Image (cartoon, rainbow, N blue to C red; front, side, top):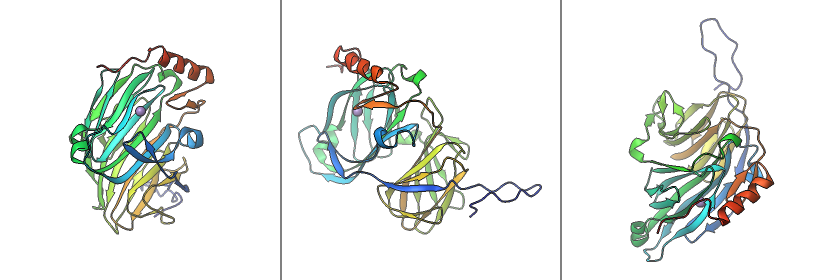
Length: 305
Ligand code: MN
C-alpha cells in the first residue's frame, strides 16, 4: 500500500495516493424518530454540514426487532425543502408517500431517492405487511444538499429497486460493491443526481481488503454497517462509526477484520452557506422563514386522501 505518490517511472502508471484519514467520528446515542425509527444521528448539518458537503445528515437505524403490531409505525406528514433524502432499507420494509404523487414500498436492498427541491410534504412508515408480521428493521437515511440554483427544483421521486442496482465483484475477490449512485469500474448506478455523488454499498469477507478509487477534491467518508474494519492500514472502525477522509488523494483502503459491510459516501463539495432549521436546509435565514410560510400556506402541497 502506498501512502505517497510513487516516483513516476516512464511507462508505468502512477500509484494511487491514499486520502488521509482525518478521524473516526461517532454519532449520538439512539433516539426515536416518530414511533418507527430508532436512529443514531451519525452527523447533521449543524455539526458537519460544511466539512462533509454535499452531505447534510445521516441517520442510522441499527438492526432492531419489532414485534407484530396493528398500529402504524413511523412519521406522519411533514415537509422538506432544499435537498434530497435518500433512504436505504437493509432489513424490514418501508413505505413512503409524498405530495408530488411519489411514493412506494422498499424492502431489503431497495432505495428511495426523494428530491424535496422547492418543497414537498411526505410521510414515512413501516409497510403495513412488515408492521403486521414484525421483524428486524435496519436502514439508513441520508440528506444530500442541492446547490442554490437547484433548491427550487421540482419535487420528484425515484424508487431504485435492488434489481436495478448493479453489483460489482471487487478485484481479487474480497467481496461485492453495489453502485447506488455514481460509478465504480465503469458500472453506473441508477440514481439521477444533481451533482457528482458516489454512493456504494460494500460487503467484504473477513480477512480481505480492497482499495476504492475516489476522486481527489471530493468529500469522502464511509459508515460501518457491520463488523470491524481497519482504515488505510491504521485505525479501526466498528458498527456505527464514520470514517472521514481528507479531500486530497485518489483512494481509500479498507481491510475487513471480520465480515463487514460499509456504506461509502463520496461527493463533489460546494462552498455555499448552509442555513438549516428542522426539515428545511437553505442558504439564508430569510429563505428558511419563507419555507415555513410556504408550508403553512399549503404551497408544498398535500398528501392525497
Ligand atoms: Mn422526512
